[in-house]
Length: 288
Ligand code: ATP
Ligand code: MG
Image 1: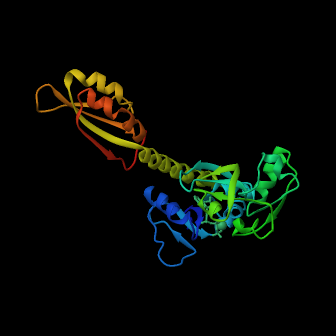
Image 2: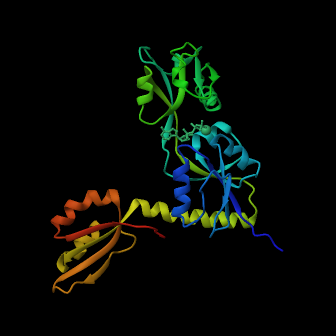
Image 3: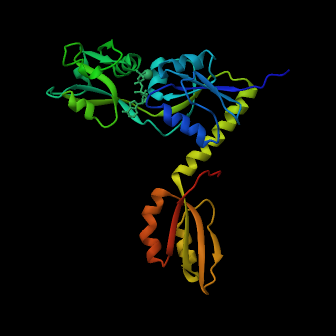
């Protein structure tokens, strides 16, 4: 009996990325049962097995082929420096990896770090950054609570994940350099079989449709016929807008797709051009 070929994707077992990673798969129409404390689960309607792992371990599992794909932060991909392909940015878990020092330090620029020690959970990234910039600093690898290191005399500076910066401030630190920007990414083993590559293509097609839909809105509005051209020009839709006559003589209904940001930029111009009954609604999937 031929065994059905499945793609194995590793996602974070529990942490910041877990819910959004699973939600992305669900938005792609993939159904699975993730109740309980399972280590893996099989999708019901897509040739996929989902493995729940620590995000730190995902690059290694994907590189050695235990998993074919993985979802994790780009920072973790760079830190582990394994042979994996980054296939796609996923648009969530955006953060930056920054250098910070105690707030009373008179910081002149990166050269301050010469001869200093930096504590971080991301020492591979930090070493590479200093090497590229020609700075002679040492690193101290620690697993967590990095922000207390300067206060207890373990290191003069730190390199850690920052999103709002409030953790740094609470610990008497200030951000002085951005080392990298990160977000969740889809990674792949570089040597997938043709069959698995086919499944990956199906998955990325669906992710594209979900991502396009998230940034676009469906817009309907009523316009006097004489203004249709002017209003259409304000709506940079997929192609030209659909125009349907209304029961009321001299009026039409315009339908189009617009990026949400564009919508806020043109709303006043639409009203000035005579548009009425403007309705904007979310799109679930969008195949361009
Ligand atoms: P552990 O491995 O001990 O569970 P972790 O730091 O690896 O901890 P999370 O805190 O769940 O795990 O973070 C996972 C990923 O989420 C990080 O590698 C990073 O890409 C991203 N991330 C972390 N902190 C933030 C934040 N404050 N804002 C946005 N994204 C973040
Ligand atoms: Mg981790």
